[in-house]
Amino acid sequence: MHPVFQKQLDCLAGGDLDALLDNYAPDATLVRFDRVANGIEEVRETMRGYLTAKPELVELSQYAESGDTVFYRATMKVGGQQRDAFGTLVIKDGKIWRQTAGFGA
Image 1 (spheres, rainbow, N blue to C red):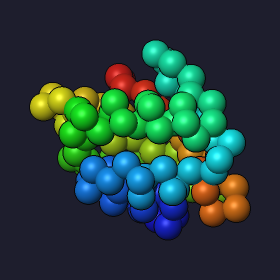
Image 2: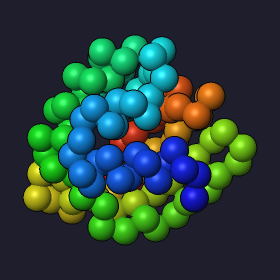
Image 3: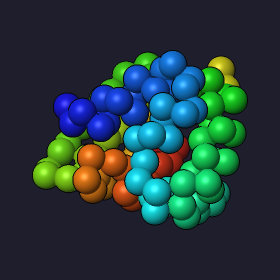
């Protein structure tokens, strides 16, 4: 497993916003269906909201990695409800530079 992805999982599990943001490049972009966060301050705002839902990894069901790109599918508990999650991380210079994240089948 890519160390940046593992750190992401650890930071989410710990609910540590500052450590989570340290995993992102200053010019990171996070694309979700409900919004796009451009730059670390918008990523901060998005992740602050996400952490209030107390996300918890139930199962990492699929994982693929090629060079600087990670693609995953997981079951998460978010806001007390179990949800299917998926996403992509593009890593540049040891930080998340581009990320997509969504819920659903």
